[in-house]
Amino acid sequence: MTVTTPSTLRDRVPTILMAFALVVYAAPLGLWMLGIEHLAGLAAGGRDFVLSLAAVAAVYGLAVWLTLRRGGHLPMRWVAVAGGVAAAAAVWGVIGLVDHGLVQTLVGLRLTLLPLAFLAVIALLPATEVHRLITVVAWLVVANAVAAVGELIVGPARLVRWGFEEDRAIRYIDGTFRAPGLTEFNAELGMFAGAYLLGYLALWLTAGARPRERAWHAGAVAAAVCLALSTSRSGAALVVAGVAGAVLLDRGRGKARRRLSLVLAGVLVVAVAGGFVVLGAAGSSSVFERFDVWTDRLRGVPVIGSGIGSAGAATYSRVADTPPLFVDNYFISVGLQFGPVVMAALIASVGFALVVLTRRSATKPSSVPLIAVLTGLACASLFIESWEYAAAMATLALFVGHALRLDQRRPRNLWQEAGR
Image (tube, rainbow, N blue to C red):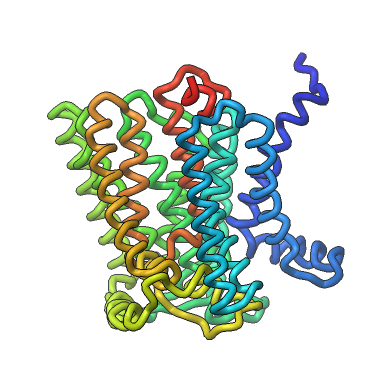
């Protein structure tokens, strides 16, 4: 019989808090439907955003706590990276403070640094806990798929009568109803589902990493359903580009296995495109609208940008002091906030990282999921501010953390091995 000790409970606290954050980010509409959001708001004096605030505090608090508690083996190169990120956040935070005020800048900082906080927490968790959290994500994807199918059956008109918000939870694009599942709107559902499906398929493409858990398989099927019913082309781009990158750039694959992977990637592309045609979501008007917007965004932008929070979701927050700035391209968003030079450096860094990972894939199988995530994320970022979708970024961070452990022998966390 397993005895639960105080130390065991203490070790499980980070996993429990991360699972809480995943539920808040991946199922906010579900929490609203169950009345949990309302009850939490009442307990916090009518502040209906308390759950979101608690999730943010949990992730950032864990990042600090785990670094202090388990980060003793952190190699100096990662300390330098963390210092560089902190310095950049400080500099462009001051620029944002001057441009649009303190509160909007803080919202921008939260959105910008949250994916890095996810990755830091996951890197410092034991491999078994990362495995458990991926299972949690798999069941959240299943729950979203059930909800999306239910929304399609019930129909948008009745959902509006039930209190679903029009033009957010209930959206029509190119004449097609786009289900939100348990997320706030369809793009969130599509990115979340796409992130899970990409991570799952990337493991299948990696030698010795084939998923065997039934919950993970169920999550993959559910992710395909979510992706179809959300009709998120950005989520589809995330999956298709990521899988294509993993297949084409992997140097550790034999010719026969490579041909099979190419065939599977082709089938995936055809299946996604065919599914969108069947659902009536194959129109491209919204894509061309974005091209028209992008051509004007960088004109007149200062070389150093307008500061963190000057574009993207921060401008749509309830505390924003500037008009909402529609971008739907994260590279352009970076250019607006940090300046065109930083945007160009980011694009060059993505290309350089892909070259390094491609060479590394000849001897390190863990490079394949990393190539998939980086390629997919870069492609999706051309059509949406992918970095600001918390559920999707947390999911990708979990698969990255899982992949980085494939080349190691039972490390308690990544840094213990990296520091040796």
